[in-house]
Length: 218
Ligand code: G3P
Image (cartoon, rainbow, N blue to C red; front, side, top):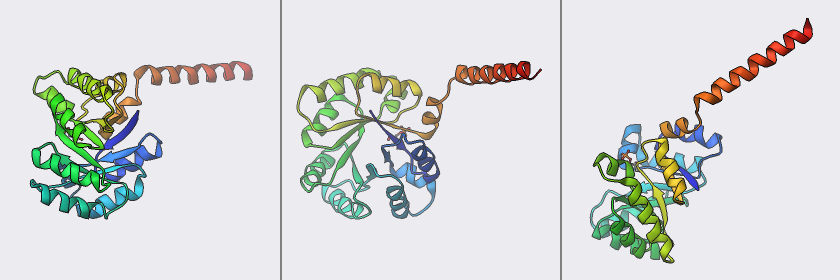
């Protein structure tokens, strides 16, 4: 299973990159706007930091606009992947771009039917937003299971990126169902490292070791 980090913050990317657990990055206009810097320059820096795929989203709503933007965005670096919204215009853009060997990531996906359409269009990646489904009171885990079932039932090349991850349980669920990728916010990645018993256990080991040393030195 691959881990992407869902952020446009370089410090966060570098910190997780140093731990050796990051295979790629996903950004979106909201995440880039939070950084308050030139988005193209920021994407350049992110691509220099991470070898794996870095998703950058188009803003246009018409197919021609998306295709034009995508052709510009891929000039940033060879590892740029183009995020395209799950609309009819977007799906047309996916077909055109994938035929040009420009990798696409269909975003704002909320249903199994949308997964199927994006897969048929030949998207390299498909990103269901499970946290937002959960916010709507829908069963986000069932949606993921059925989406993976659909992808596995045929010879689709698309990889599923579990996106809009809100908690560590979401990552476990994504792993259980064999999702190819989860794109995880920094705060959730941090929590994945932690368990109170690890800290307590380590304290006890060090305390006992010190005690033994004290006894031997007496
Ligand atoms: O990768 C998708 C993600 O950026 C959306 O997450 O938390 O805004 O629903 P969120």
